[in-house]
Image (cartoon, rainbow, N blue to C red; front, side):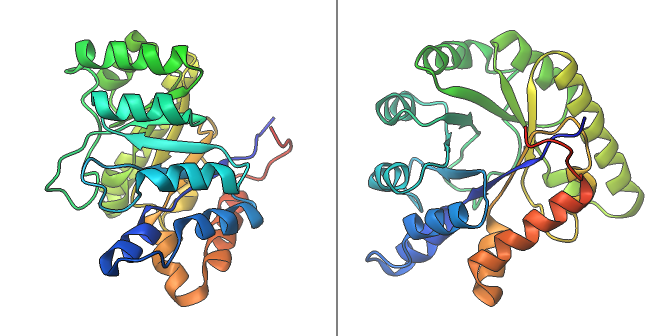
Length: 248
């Protein structure tokens, strides 16, 4: 039985445009409402230390505006843990974060940060928040996620997205192998970063993947065709890559 692949839409860069000029327009909450209206399965928002796009009050407004689950991307800091516990998003994805980076540049070193991550994963999980670790598709990092008790991993697809030719095929196989290994060990595998209309289908076809999280590309396309059409097109490509026989 093949299950429908979920699409989570990251609305950070609607807020990035808003913050570039100040004020309240464009409103990321309106983007969340659009995503809900066209069949998106979740909203992802990254509350960074420097608040370069999503702001604290956006979280409250997003949760109030739509029934879609909120996936809060967050660094492994005490401040972000307290914010997550206060807002209780449906999910929290722990990501690496460096102030000087333009976007998340790689996966979390779950293996090297076990002692730091263990109490965070525990506290979030005890609060009923589904914890995800944003990691490279590597056995070492997946083993660390298993030891930490994370129910979900999100594989960083940047290496796949930026590769070409045979190298891309190698990266795709690595993603597929790690997704299968995660599922075999009881961890739900997700994927995201750098996915576009042109490269999403081979990833979407990986049967064990439960969710793709896509943001920057969809917001960029929305400038030309509108957000509704942008999300709908991605949904169509995902469904074509993995026709579903159940809505699970």
